[in-house]
Every structure is written in C-alpha cells, then in structure tokens.
Length: 377
Ligand code: DGJ
Image (cartoon, rainbow, N blue to C red; front, side):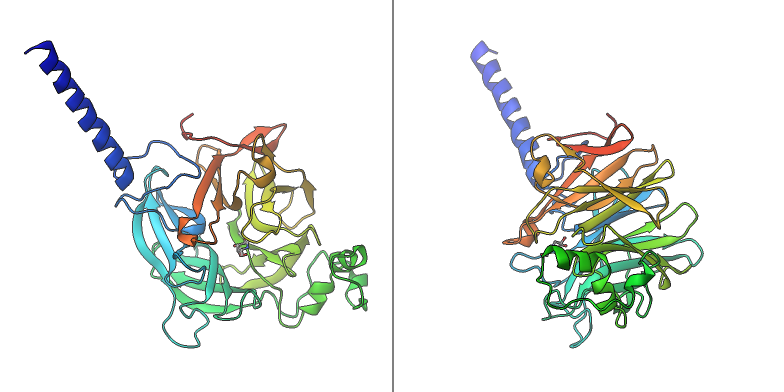
C-alpha cells in the first residue's frame, strides 16, 4: 500500500470514528461517565431528560429521578410527573409517567394545572412510596398554593392521587411568639415597607391563613435518621419557609410546624443533613430568573435556624451559576450532589439541569462551577 493510500485509510477510519462518536453523543446513546452541568442530558433512549424541579430517591440500589414533565409552549402540566432510573447517576433510563394529570374536568390535577417540584419518599412501615408536589388549580395562576399528595406501591408508580390542600389548617406554628397570635396588624402598612416586613416576620400571613391552612409552593420532603419525615415549603406568599412534621404514614401532618427566616423571602428549599447538622440551600424569589443562593443551618430540624451568606463561589456565584436549587442528594460515601434547574420559561422543555458537588470550607457547604465532573474524583 502506498503512503498516500495508507494516509487516506487512516483519515477515513479517524473520520468515521469522530462522526460515530458525535452521532452517538447527539443521540445520547454514548454512556456518560461524568456530569456536564447545564448541557443537554440524554436518557438511555437518546431522548432529552424531561424531569424538571426534580428530586431523587435511592431505593434498593437504584436511583429514581422524579420531575416535572415540561412542554414547549407553556409551564402548565400537560403530562405529569416523570420518572427515570439509574444505578450510576450519569445514565438514566426513562420509566415513563409516574403520576399522570387527569382528563376529568374539575379534577384538582386536571391537565393544564400547575404541578411543580414533585418529591418522593419511601415509608418503611407501610411499604408505600409517597409523592408530594406543589399544586395550582387549572386557570388559577399561583393563587391556591396547595400541596398535592399521591401514593404508589412501586417507586416508578403509577401514583394514585389522594388529596390536595393547604398545610395544617387551624394550627399555629411552634415558634411563633404567642404575643403575636392575636395582634391586630395595621392593614395600612405599605407592601415591602419596613413596617410591613416586620408584620410579616411577626406572623401576619400565618394569622391570615390560619383557618384555611398555610400556603405551600416550592417544596421538598426529608426523611430523618429516626424515620420521621418533614415537608419543607415556601409559605406565607413565599416570604417565609415552613417545616411541617408528617404523620408516621407520611400522608398527613402531625400539626407541629415551624417558621424559618421569617420575611426572608426564600424559595426552592433543598435540605440535607451531615454529621447531625441540618443545612438548607434556598434561593431568593425572582420568578424564573436566577438569583443568589442562600444557606441556612440548624442543629435541630425544628429549629432554631440561622441564615448565612451565599454558599456559591467564583464566577456566576451571584446567580447560582444561572440556576435555582431543587434537591440535594446524599450519597452513600458521605458526599452530596446539589441539583438545580436552569429554567427556560420561553421554551420550558429546554430547561437544563445543573448538578454540582457540594464542597466544604470550615464546616460549611460551598458550591463552585464545574464544566464537567466525576463522582469518583
Ligand atoms: C420559581 C419557582 O421556584 C418555580 O418552581 C416556579 O414556581 C416559578 N418561580 C414560577 O415563576
């Protein structure tokens, strides 16, 4: 074979290899061996993963990723909650729709409702998988601020819708100073003024919503080491986070709940526990636009909680690297993955996932951008 022919053959082999690899990447059929935060992420069928505002569950060695199915033109729930499975956290198999919206007119979960931030926990006592999500009734904007509850026998579902409503009607939070319970708040205080903020901090919204129950929007579920579970949610017009203890079957509230960072205006709570201490990363409230993350810590899940500075470091830290927290996954090796969404309101399906490793500095979690990273490093 002449040198010319050999070179041509080598070029053809290399080009074919490069083309195949590019094609495989485009299809998503190439096995991932690392995370690429913010990049398109394909499932094992080569389809873009559609599981936004999600959360993870580790059950019998498999990770299940639950999230909002989003379409191209609106944020309304037209499908429901999707479920993907993985054993390595890089490569995800689509298991389909775990919880489906309903075609029954007037159903609280009617197709076209707003269904956000689904989370699933497993109840060892009942053997049931319990899903909570933020639910807004069809055509009512974000006014209802309800929580929806669904249950299944298998992690991937199908989940049966049980109920929806506000949290703990008629119950006062444990950490509200009793002098404020019957306080007559001055309705003339202008929204966002210092006086108004003070009123909110003193429980004006809790009092307003006492009878019907507390609002619940962005949310997470957390199961503690003793098996007790908690619902963590943005309440009081997104001005105050609340944590409510769940009953043993995880389907209801015990009536015990607390307020965190009153009038602090937090959304997107993501709570995790390390060495007996509780950490929560949240965001501010700027709709779909990113803002600086916040960090809160506590020695006891039911408080008191202390707020700290933005845990993000480096370029993009002031906007949480163009994302908003949704969940923090504890790994069996003691490390944690921060999961966030890069929302795309003009084409919701194009929202991206930003997963970053939690790093530690002086006992506090910090987040840094990585173009790509591996769990093994
Ligand atoms: C930010 C929330 O975190 C999202 O889940 C969603 O509710 C948007 N706001 C709506 O503007």
